[in-house]
Image 1 (cartoon, rainbow, N blue to C red):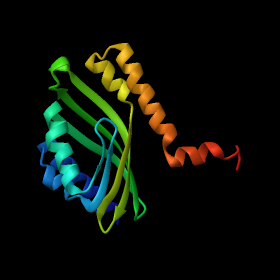
Image 2: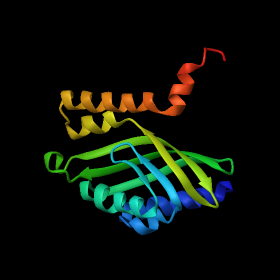
Image 3: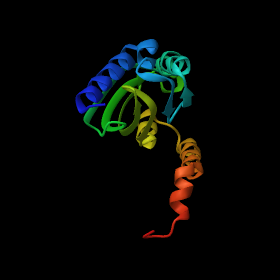
Image 4: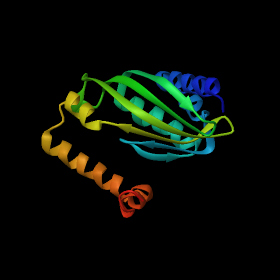
Amino acid sequence: MTQAEFAALLTRLTAAAEAGDGETFAACFTPDGVYHDYIYGDHKGRAEIAHMLKYMFHRDATDYRWRFFDPVCNGDTGYAWSLSSFTSTVPEFQGKPVLIDGMSRFRLQHGLIADYAESVNGGVAMVQLGVAPARMEKVLRKWSGLLHERPGSRDFLAKKIGA
């Protein structure tokens, strides 16, 4: 995939996300593509990805905006920094606006996303929502455990410094 094709794919992806168009959003992925969401978990295949966008994210948020900046692509892997904002519709956080930034990694195949993962400081979002400190700690401990459980993380920690 070229740099220009990658940028165009990101534009299609974010336009569909903002519109809540799960089918167009999922069509940016390979049929067995995976979307790793830091809130809603992993979703594999276009049907699950479309469902996550339409019936989870757009259930819990309105006024959604998402833009990628400085995309880079080497053909089969792309990265981009993003800003996104939304207003919560979750009853306990109703009407609270949130702004977050993130870094995303895209594994690409045949002009589509085969695997999407993001690194987002969810603590920043939770502070804006007014999540209680004890609940924030519980969530952050869970995310920390998930990070340590990843095969890549275990492999990284098993290697000696400088190896």
